[in-house]
Length: 329
Image (tube, rainbow, N blue to C red; front, side, top):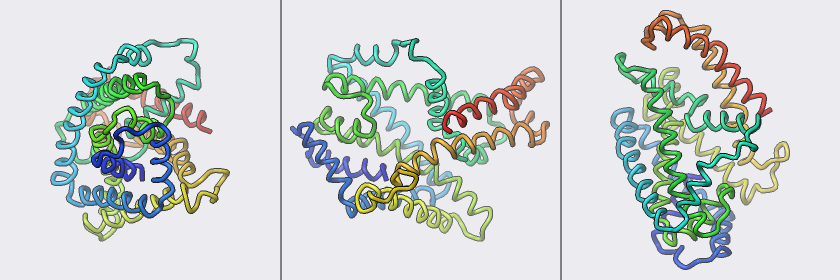
């Protein structure tokens, strides 16, 4: 659904709708989008069609080709935006905001929030890494690949901060305004935000195809359905959930479950409960139930390295996940 928002705003930016608007106009534009279920449904459907189309083409033809195209493009756009950020006069303020720690704010809540964010940004507990890992060649170094993913993810995150926060501070915007930072304040900051919303679409699409893949793979393995049929069925189910979420901003805004609308409920259910629960299940399964020799061979660690990994995987990692889960409860 939010991918649909990005598509809608990319079209708005391309048409010049953001040129010369003020904060009130930007807020009204976003409120108008949320209040229009037909428009939200149309863009949500387009985004899901793109996602299903890529996944249905398969791993090498669809997923790999799309990722090889979109990820470098995302990196180039980010670097261009960082370059633009250096011209705003607030690049130093952004660097200070990102990299000057306030140790008085570091407590258990912050640590738990950081661990929870790590789960989300590294796609842990979603089945994504398991699905992609199942396609790797036998000679791939899993430890090195995992380290590369973590380093690359952190690098991209910091680069994104250096791209966005100079513009935020240069325009006197609130850096903690959540989705409003993207869909209300950033159109003001950019004037015409084609570049940024192209970046957002790439990021959302690479994530959505990754999230759909484990479900499609499961359906392929456990049912008679082929790749295309599995992609369509999984896509339709996701599309239907998206409809419930988008209607929670308008026609179903009065429908509350445990005091929350459908969008907020789905967000909290997945990020606060399902992610840490599935992550805990995954690490317990790998560390305690998989054949030890098979794990040692796949990780390709020496006796000392495997011993360290074993302690971390069996005791340290589960304890950390349980701490995140307890914090979310």
